[in-house]
Length: 329
Image 1 (tube, rainbow, N blue to C red):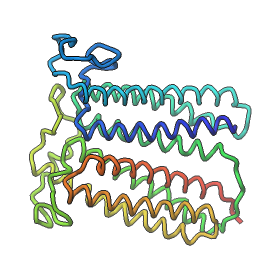
Image 2 (spheres, rainbow, N blue to C red; image 1 turned 60 degrees about the vertical axis):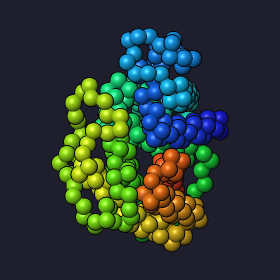
Image 3 (tube, rainbow, N blue to C red; image 1 turned 90 degrees about the horizontal axis):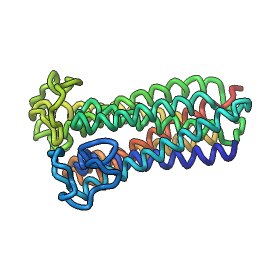
Image 4 (cartoon, rainbow, N blue to C red; image 1 turned 180 degrees about the vertical axis):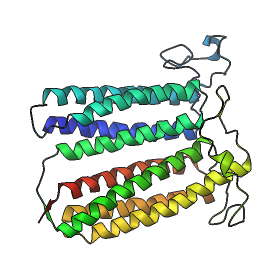
């Protein structure tokens, strides 16, 4: 179990790196750095120059963007391999009552689907629905790996008051659901290039309620064959997407801060410590979100915003595990 836990931790770290690199690739406009899949211009490695590119590829080679995309694919493939190893080990250890078996196999199915979404991201030319689904799949993978790490570490039975546990458990689950919705809204904002449509804060375009087109903003599926790089929506639709993300951020903040305060009042040390971590990540995330707006979406701040969302999800998963493992007295 110790070896399994160590491998699960390594896989979790790699998953976090894949999410960060994926955000960097998307935000640096390198998502179509390689117009084919799984290779790059028909090669395993990025071609050295445009002269080596087959004439059938209409998109010109930009080596810097192509290498960003391919490194992301290499890391994602490595992540898939480690998840497969975890599933094999879990199956071998299935007689151990402490060995989770279902989650590793769920992760195998999820990572295969993630690979398909990665392919469709390229072949469907950054279709927002696919890009956002790819982000949600990555975050789900991260949450399941975090749960797997927590489930296979050495357990210490910690007593917790029944009333306290009865409140924290549903509140943590609800907070995770709210965060997932907010991550969807963030992915939808990014994939539709709506992050910069409101350059001011807390107003948008110097208005508290600017002109918005919600109907067009949330048409999930659009025509195939359109190049969605840099976005195709008009300003009113992008404004609606941006403002929904802001409103979602407010709801998410209120929900998670209530959870964090409740956890900090716990009589269980592990729950208090995790609650403090949740509160810290939440505050940093809010600061990064506001900085993105007022500073015009600096690349590394935007990537950090994605990374902090991942850390916040991980901390909520850890809190859920701590609450679930606490015994009622």
